[in-house]
Length: 258
Image (cartoon, rainbow, N blue to C red; front, side):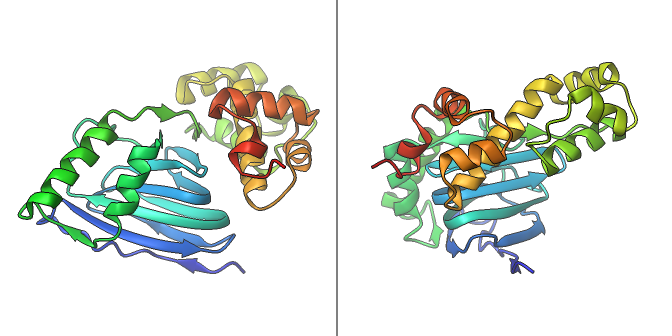
């Protein structure tokens, strides 16, 4: 059985920002929990999978996930993961969404996050800290998001299909066969997925395969093996999709080229 853990943030409403740094091994799981504070979780190494009732978010290196206050979530590690977490007083960062999202972290914001984590509790009473908090919040508000999520359908029929696709992304059966086995026609499930996830069933399946492959590479699997295990017909098809989403090849992104 994999080890499990809860993180107890040291954030308080009386301070605008508190921080936490942690190192985790592959497969470690932080149990379902929530915070009274808004949370930014940055992965400087490894891949995190964040799950909520609304969906699944994959957070590769140099990305962060924004988790609004009172969002019940769990986090599972793929590969060795270095987590740097910022806890903001409720509504302190007002312009970020009130739902989870994955944010791109540029070099400046990365250094700000790492620097901030050297201090456990930040206060506006210290001028240097007040100025840095202002810059950090400004940069976060200007940071674009990355579509690295799988929205969770609500209807039981659509949810059964989603769980089947997640359990075996390489399943070679047609979507019609999978839907029929889950108790609904493909046409019905297609309608439900568009209504409840804003993705077509085929697009949802493609995203599930992509995110599965990303997690596999983070644990040390070769790109070609990760692609085939996720259901891609070739590694080139996966690499093309990966480059479109993250801007470079998987080998370059994970530092395995050469």
